[in-house]
Length: 318
Image (cartoon, rainbow, N blue to C red; front, side, top):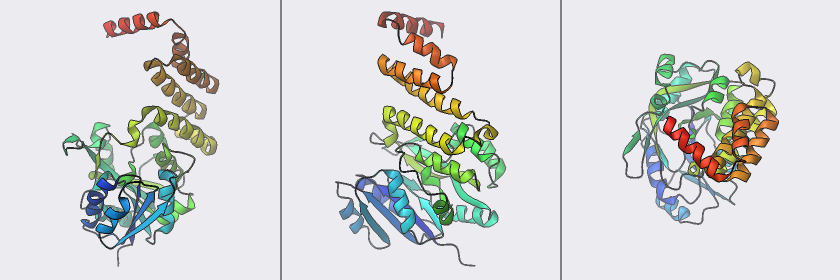
């Protein structure tokens, strides 16, 4: 039996210097991919020239800047393979990734999406995290599953997003059926889609490290404030469609949104931006009363000297 066709979708925005390594890691796969679809999301650097120099087998699509969700969606619709894999420009794959994931899908045909563990390096190539699963206490869990579908996957995803986008291989028909990535979201759009898929289909993980993520100064997730605000938007979108199901996943829908707002408020509080902290904590309490938000709302109204004194006291108690 011939293996399924795999299309790789790479969204990129001013990341030309990372493209050669990412594409080289695709071409080094022990199970070849059928096509590479690069969606240039309005880059102003030399992305086009770099791609042209990388040779044949690359579909280069250009669009006005619309964010990673829109770029990945365009790649999904342009893909010709039965399976779609995602790879961000500042990541790369280990050589056996696609082969191991396709074999898992062969063994478990009900699985719609399969991810994997990842390692993290800095810009110099030094290892920062040898295994993300091990760091998060999940290595034993996924090793024991040995590729079997993840039980209670929506509940587990809401507790901790264990799926990094660049590890994902998914059935294209499922990505299309579930509507792709929500283009309203600039952060958390990946978790929101994985959750929509897991609510209807089985998902699984290859337990080994199959992706290397590079942490550098221009990583999108380094922008803490917009990321936390984006997670509030994501939490609201998830509640919008999943409210009836969330209690069965062990999650209070309003508490989920309230906690995202409280996290944003705490960041403002720590940054000394008290007016914005009070606004976020008040919004959290309107969603669902909670002691943490109430305590920090009260604290954010204290004089700066009092807050400094309380912080010093807390540090001494530690």
